[in-house]
Length: 300
Image (cartoon, rainbow, N blue to C red; front, side, top):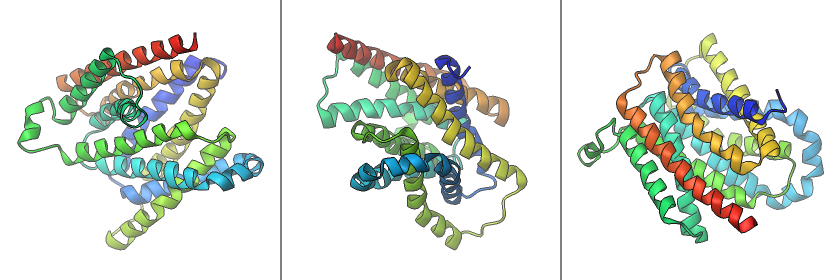
């Protein structure tokens, strides 16, 4: 099973899809900022014993690029999680799942604006379709309502969260050649350190109560599955079939996320959700197919 890239990709995407559902469950028992801080602290505790030897081997490169791991990647990862868990206090897990698919669009735009990468007409059409899909979802099927009352608070926060994760992914272009366990541990350390001030703010301003047993189980899931198991499964699948092919499967996350939200949270899946998914994923697949064709042509 662990040599089958498609099984691994299924594990990774279902685990990531469950992150939004778990965050919705956690909204009733956890404050978003303390949840994020605890999440990354526990990830560090779990990963550090396995990564220690590799961290020692990579120490010279880490010493040169510590600001990149902690100040860039760690910052973006922490802000994404902080904002996503905050958004789930105001919007549905289905909306959050679909809106996460907006991240590849932002990456395409960043490549075009910042790196002047050539963009073909079909890629532009794909980007427009994806933006329209997110627009339909975040306005609950009434796109013109944005001109009257604006976006729902939760959807607006989630779209801002997507900006930070897109920045994280875009920054990976300059990733130093460290072992993947070193990389994973450093990102977790950076995200934990960045989230500490937010957690302290929450502790000082909110009347926090001790979470129930079920809330701790949700935290354990968030730590082990989307933060570790999904990351490992995806990394292994990339090693087996390559990043371009594996990356396409991330488009399954909003679909699985919506299914899990309906099954576990009893959220209603409406027509505008279906329209949003079709537009977002269709647009991304169109844009990525052209990009993949360009990469193949350049390689040949």
